[in-house]
Image 1 (cartoon, rainbow, N blue to C red):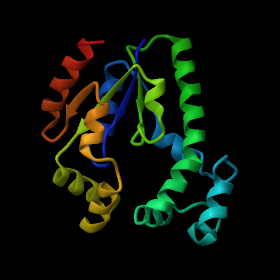
Image 2 (image 1 turned 30 degrees about the horizontal axis):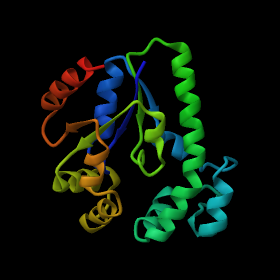
Image 3 (image 1 turned 180 degrees about the horizontal axis):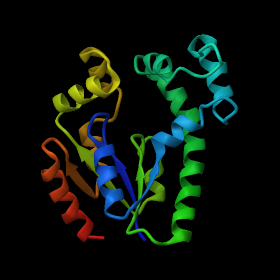
Image 4 (image 1 turned 90 degrees about the vertical axis):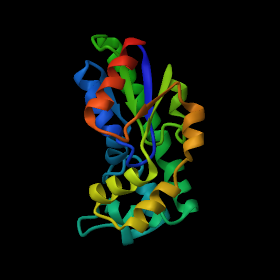
Length: 196
């Protein structure tokens, strides 16, 4: 059973690709979901994050307000680097655990590691192949604005803080173009799944 790393820049539409692959029988290991869980109160990364960023990112119950944390890190590469360094070790451990579990169960067509920061977290090292989702920069900006309820400027800043398209392309065993409609995307996925 192949382990496929699925990545791409914010707004490229990885979640749509991921859902289509799950419908085709793949097990999805969702690194974003893992990233959200490890910063919850009492979880491994929580204390490290509070010590570095301070209590200004907490709500009344002491939970991390992800939007506040996002505003800090997406405008400061150094602070973003710390967040990545802090969280990646915990994410990697949980991704490996979930891959091992899926392999033991053995019923899936493939295991998809859906990870926006696949390359940054060096998660490609646990994958057999890397599939990169592509979308035009303007399409991505509009999607990020709609998804996160943020301004065009903030959406562009988030995109600028990520790897360049050339870096993604260099790591890709396959590129999935998600700039157009769903039938176009699903046609590509049907073809790519035949290669497994």
